[in-house]
Image 1 (spheres, rainbow, N blue to C red):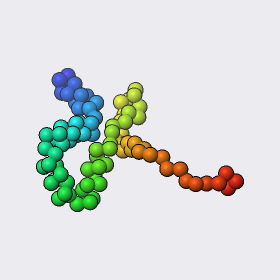
Image 2: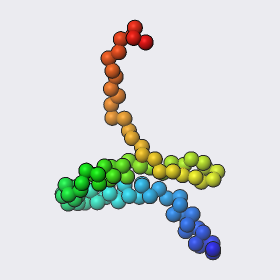
Image 3: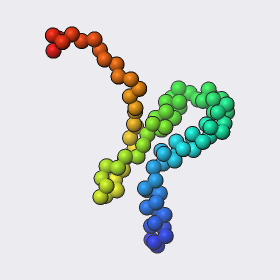
Image 4: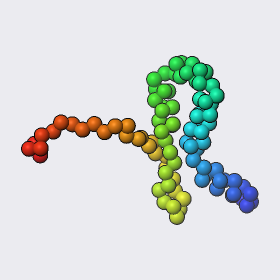
Length: 90
């Protein structure tokens, strides 16, 4: 394989495809929000859940030396709910 092809492949492997999709999705939403709402209304619940999962996914580096990455769903905690537990129950 020539150096250009190797360089191109390395660049593609280093790219976070989820970040690229989120950026494109955000730009589309900014420019066509009404159209996006219509599209979302026509999606099944399974497809809506899949889209949500993709938008929450990030490529995480597992091994910096080997360049190993894995797709992971990153969920941000919106508010911690604390159960009412009596201290003497422990």
